[in-house]
Structure formats: C-alpha cells, structure tokens
Image (cartoon, rainbow, N blue to C red; front, side, top):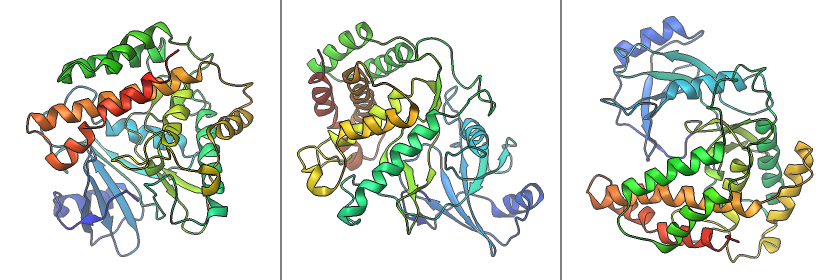
Length: 344
C-alpha cells in the first residue's frame, strides 16, 4: 500500500497491540505479523498481517511533538468522512487515543493492494493506456474537490480566511527559519506571491495538500485509482492548489529526486498536455476556466522549494540522512528558478 517495501524491524509490542485490536476492530484475529515500511514518512507506518486479512497501522512518532504536527487523528477523520463519497480511500477501522498501547496515538486502516508509480512517464505502462491513467487521476481530483464538506462533517476541518495568504505566510516563515543563504529567485517569489494572491474560492473545498503520483494506488489490472494516500496535509482551502501541485510533474526535470516530464515528448509518450488536463478538470467541475494559472504553479514550486530548504538545513546540521537529504536540498535553487520563470 505504501511506496516502500516493508522491513522486518518493528517497534510494536504485539502482545499488547493484538488483544487491543481484537477487542476494538470487528473481525480482527491474531496471530499478527508486523513489518515496518521503510522510507521518510513522518508518521511511522506498519503492515499488520493476520491469517485472514492485512491492515496498515499509522502512528505518531514517539517523544515530544510539535503542536498540530503528526496529526494522525486528522488523517483518520478525513478517511472516515470520505468513505461514503466517490473519492477512493482506504477503510479507516479504528483510532486509538490511548498512548499506552503503542507509545503514541495511532489508527488502523485497510491494506489496499495495487500499483504505485514514481515516474510520471509511466514507463511500465503501454503507451496507449497512459492517457487513461492520467484521466483517472484528474477524475479523482475533481471528485475530491466536489465533496460536500458540510454533508460529510468536515465544515470545521480548516481555518477561515484566505487560504493562499495563510499558506504563503506559513511557507515563508518555514523558509526563513531554514535559510542558509540568499537565493534571488526565492526573494522574488516572497515579494511577488502576496501581491498576486487570488481572492478566496467562493466555496472552500477539501484539499489533499500533497496530491502527487506516488501518493496514489492504482488497480493492478485497470487504469483506475484505487486509493489516495497520505492525508496529513489535508485541510479546507482552494482546490486549484492541488491541481497545480499535481501539474508540477509536467514541468519538473526528468532526472532528479522527484522525476518529471520537462523536455520530454509527451505526445509521443501518450500523456496529455497541461491544457488538456486543465480543460478536463474544469469540465468535470463545471468551471469556465482558470484565471491566474501561473500564480498557482508558482506557489506550488515555492512551497516545494521551502520544504526542500528545510531538508537542506537539517542535512547541514547533521540531523538528516545525508545522501538523500543533500539530494533533496540541492533542489531548492532549481525549483525557485522554475517558479520565477512564471512571474509576470
């Protein structure tokens, strides 16, 4: 279900966890085999296998946590809320707020077996089928943004006020806190984005916050999204933030930590261009079009550059795994430059 192969190293007391889950999750029965998914998830994630089923457990890290960080209870809440909607998600089984069971708050969800892709060129998929995968992605995103947040109990899931204004302020603060030197394109963005911030959407939508290819599980035998993963950054806000964040993959370099399609012949690959994806999204949602598209793209690159700067700062301080962290940190200037190219 997650993007990495499970590791046999486990930080769970199964003698405590198993009877707890048997008591609180219908049909759950041991014995349990547990493996931990490797990788950089901020919330440790485990595969639990029983004789009859497989589950995924996500919990907060142990120790002192920053306020509002690692909010697995929010993830559980949004999964529960989306269960009756057309948005494909894992089934949320149980939220445990008793920290004595695993050492921190956790929730249990279904294991969704399927395919996850890292490269938006989809080299493992036949050319004529690639467009169908992108069509399913856009349909999934439109369905997410069409969710009636009042009807599913998420009216209070985000803060009021201008979404982009808050986001620009947040990621500017994050960038300044991690700054290791002046980067001219970032300075240009910090000045330009607030001055070109669009007004609030008439009706805030549920936004994923990290909607990208490798956060989607596809069916094994069909070009159809089976589940959307990693809802940690979800909130209420402007849905075009999600669309632009996904469309970054068309503009990112083909080689790098986050591969993209920049410079590739997308027609030869059988992948729709940006205009076609935007048009399909607008058709599905009944929108006449999108004004200020460059703003949404520039903000997406700026946000990703700010995140990469945080990784760079931790790497320089020796608080991150160096090989991977330095590679991510090296993305700051290229991302900022890609954003700066979009400024009016």
